[in-house]
Image (tube, rainbow, N blue to C red; front, top):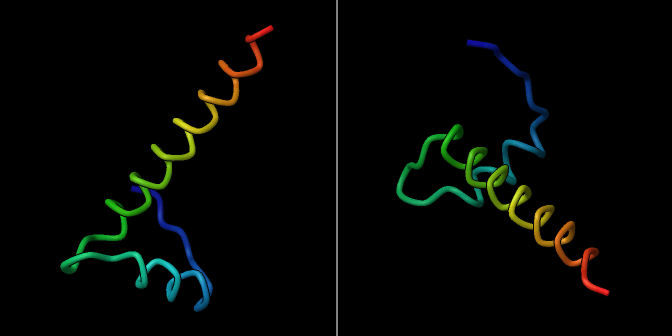
Length: 49
């Protein structure tokens, strides 16, 4: 599995999002899903004339 290194401020921001000792990978996956959903909504919104 790839490893990444985060600076302290990023870890603090992730810690602020954690619920009940949620794992970092769960938080990151959730953030990616939100980003993809917003991207899809923006893409579909641009199809409206």
